Length: 113
Image (cartoon, rainbow, N blue to C red; front, side):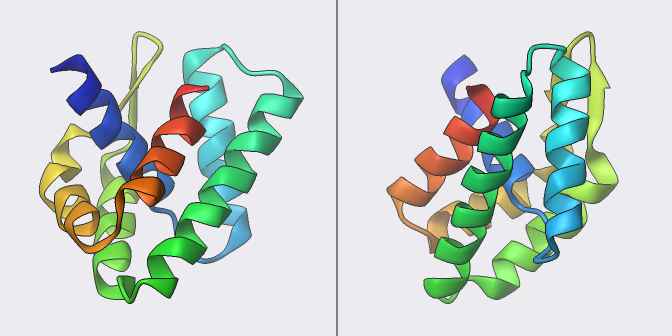
């Protein structure tokens, strides 16, 4: 169950708007929340999320991506050093059904490195 939950969080966190500043802001927020990031970790997060975004868009999943983005922006919370976006499960699942596994793994890696 923890892996599924982590995967959902990772997917959700990866779903930021196409604008780089939102991705950068999310990675900064993630690092602030977990308190476990070096500058390189934050840069890797940004790179991985931008790659994941491109992959989702390349697969024709823009509508699902946009819905998940909106949810993540509304639901992002830091709880005792863990990122919580559980309220976005439906939106993230829809994006996951639209994209392939490598995109999902990239999302997961961006959040859990």
